[in-house]
Length: 114
Image 1 (cartoon, rainbow, N blue to C red):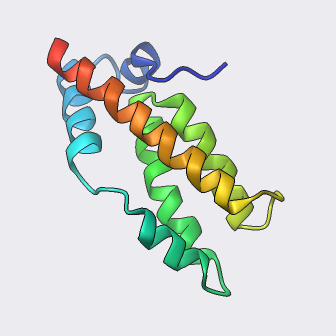
Image 2 (image 1 turned 135 degrees about the vertical axis):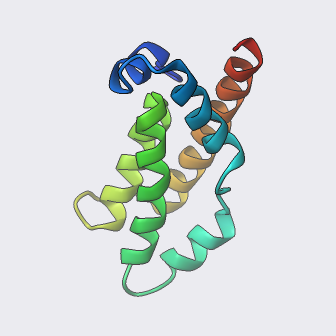
Image 3 (image 1 turned 180 degrees about the vertical axis):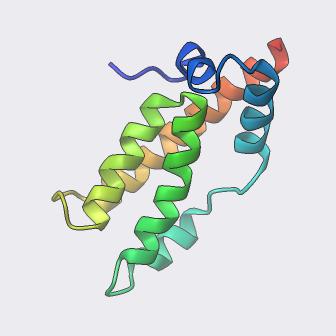
């Protein structure tokens, strides 16, 4: 089962660089902010490529910091947008947004403890 925030995995991927992990966690929490209305706008286009790219950005950042649950949800949404899987976009969007909120809450707690 995917973890909300797998810091051990993230540290391993970063070669044990705790300062880099802290920087990436801060960037994830405070950097480019997800905008649901932007995703919905992109999903309404006939070509869903830009919507998939938008989701891919957040998925990639999540994987770098060990936000496994959110990354898995983002992967499902991206796969649906790219036509690799069938899925309900409305339900996937809701799961994406909720898992992102949960990841951000875990990140904020982690940053306070660092």
